[in-house]
Length: 351
Ligand code: 1CP
Figure 1 (tube, protein in one colour):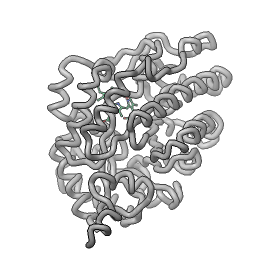
Figure 2 (tube, rainbow, N blue to C red; figure 1 turned 180 degrees about the vertical axis):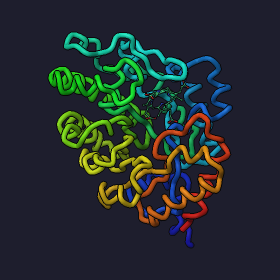
Figure 3 (cartoon, rainbow, N blue to C red; figure 1 turned 90 degrees about the horizontal axis):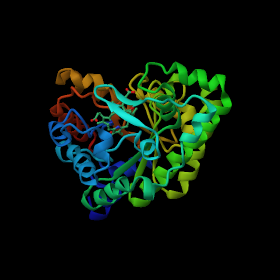
C-alpha cells in the first residue's frame, strides 16, 4: 500500500478516534474501562495507602497511572486516571473512599435545603490538578486521551444514597417523590459535568466518555423524563468542540436507542445484549463500544478467546466498532489476559 493509503486508514495513533467517527481503520481499536487500576501490580505499588481522590490531586501520579496500561497492554487509547467523584469533592461535597466499597457521603443530598451544598465547578480554581495532568499526558502519549465525567443519574445516585448501593431505591424514590428537588439536583450536576468536560477538552482530551453507569435502573419512560433532558443538554453543548462523545451505562438494553438520541457519537454497550442486536437498537449511523463480559477475563484463555471472537463476529468488520469490555476490569483480572486480548483483537481484525 502507498504511504498515502496507509495514512488514510490510520495507525495506532488515531485508529480509536477514527473508529469513533466510523471511518475506516487498519484494525479494530481496543481499550478497557478501568484499565488504570487495581489489577496492575505497578498501580498498587504507586498508590501505596492513598485512595483515588488523593492520587488524583497529584498530577505526576495521575499521569504515571494513566500511562501504565498503555505501556503494558498496548491499548489504543488512554483514559485519564481520576474518579467521577473528583469534581464533587472539589466543590465542597464531603466524599471519602471507603476501602473495598467506594465513594461514601456521610451527609447525603435529599432535601431542598441540601441543594445549596452543590456549588458550580470552576475548573481552573477547583481542579487545576486534573487539567495539569491532561496537559502533561498530551506531551507523553502517542495514543489519544479520553476525558470523562460521571453521568447525572449516576452522580445523583451516590449523592442521594450516600454510598454504593444495590438498585439505588432512595434515588428513584426522590426522583418520583420530589421532582422539583430532582430537577434542581440534575441541573446542578449537568452544569458541573459540562464545565468539567469542556475544561478537559480545552486542556487536550481528544474524546470524552459520560459514565452514566447505573442508569440501567430506569425504565425508558422514566429515563426520558428524568435523565434524558440533562444528558441531551450536556452532549448538545459539547458538540461544537468536535471531539467524539461516548455514552456508557450498565444494564441499558432497553435504553440504547434513547442513549443515542441523547446525542452521543458512540454508545457503550454492556455484555448483556449481543453486540449486533445492540447496534440495531443504537442505529447503524452511530459507533458502538464493547462488549466482552469482564468476568470472562477471570476464566482460562480459551474461554476469553472464544467470547472475544464472538464479539468480533457480531461487529462483522463494520466501521465504528471500538472493542472494550462491557464494564470495568475486575481487580482480580490477570494483566496477561488483557495483554493477550489486545493482541487477539488486533491480529484478528487487521484489514
Ligand atoms: O482507590 C482505588 O484505587 C479504589 C478503586 C478505584 C479506582 C481505580 C476507584 C474508587 N476509582 C478508580 C478510578 C476510576 N474511576 C477511573 C480511572 C480510569 C480508568 O477507567 O482506568 C474511572 C474512569 C472511574 C469512574 C468511576 N468511578 C465510575 C464509572 C465507571 C464504572 O466502573 O462504572 C464509577 C461508578 C465510580 C465510582 C467508584 N469509585 C471507586 C469505586 C470502587 C467506585 C464504584 C463503587 C460502586 O460499585 O458503586
